[in-house]
Image (cartoon, rainbow over all chains, first blue to last red; front, side, top):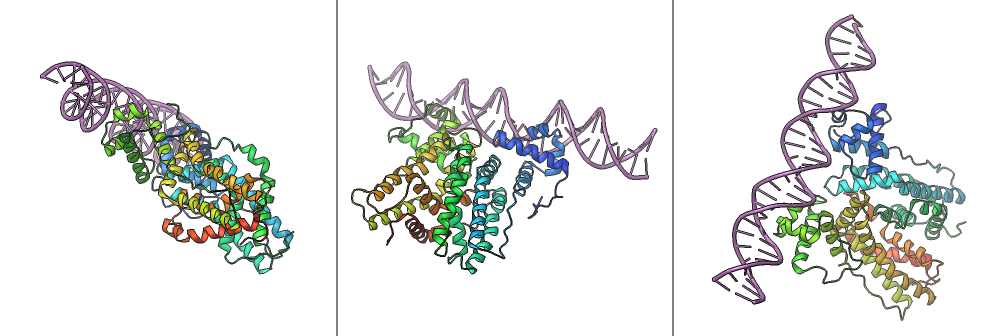
Length: 215
Length: 215
DNA sequence: GCGGAACCGTACCGTACGGTACGCCTGCGG
DNA sequence: CCGCAGGCGTACCGTACGGTACGGTTCCGC
């Protein structure tokens, strides 16, 4: 089962999507204790069907992660008429989306699953998560940064470096702490601060890379 | 087996430490495929002894992580006579240590193991890693930041925020990408850039929080 | 109405692995 | 020299789970 690079809406039938939803729910609830029997029971289907559709356990896992990861859609920013105000709002939107995604239970589960997977010399899940997480953000953000540089709104040498600085300023230690199960970082706790964090990160990024006056 | 908060050098006998080393080696080599039989064989001891010493598989895992995590020692910075130069060097040292640790195979393995563990509603390993990783850095760094603020070398409102910004600027997306097994981020690849990254992160931090002239 | 494909439910198999039991050896105190 | 504690190696048990097989049911095309 050579997994397709890009997943279309038609990749899975509705019934299959129901199965994947069940698998994802189990994954979120039960951690990595995802057994084929449990998925079959939850989705009211037979194990034989699971194997027929997804090949093996890894195939089901891959399909589940891929299916969910593809749901994350980045907002498209119009980079034709950028102003300082539009740029700031765009950055804030990116920061907000990034933070909101990262602290979500689904994202935490998917990242944990992929990391567990990566610990077994299998990188397929990790690649999918990377591709739909950090790399998706990067693909969206870099053109905007470069457009802003062309418009003299930002200054930097490498858009790659600029992207990574933005990422760091937004994410900080939040993701790793959530992945490690830090109890002092409850979801609601972080949620309440999202707006403040978004603004702070944007301010800091503009302070570093903004062209002088950055209001 | 109520695990002690702080591990002393005498917590484990040399023979036990040999066993833990074997366990860690297997963990690094084999990912999470750590079986009691494999540890026993590698360490040339009997499974019965393993269970006698560590209780069960989780106990062995915990002891291993704890044993290794405790080895990470932060440099102690003298905060009595801080100058701009000393501060910069201290920050660079922290950044260097943090980056070097994070990209190490042992750190990646330990984090992956703890995250896998956290996916099963067990937070003990995650807490240990957190405590010896990010939190240890924080404990060391915050007093220095505050001392620097007192010395008018830095300006910020919350030392907690300042610490997290520093963390973000240093780590960026490196750790999550390594944990996810990003192939385009080889260890040597990152290693080569450590010094540049260290300097860049420090510059950026000082640009944000330094008191005006920051050379 | 009929044949077959798809699929459900369940029983089943093989294996891997956590955990236990036991026989044997070694070293040490008396 | 004896006994015994600690520990090695191995055989063993139970279970959980990945994967397969098969009978029964539904639904669709003809």
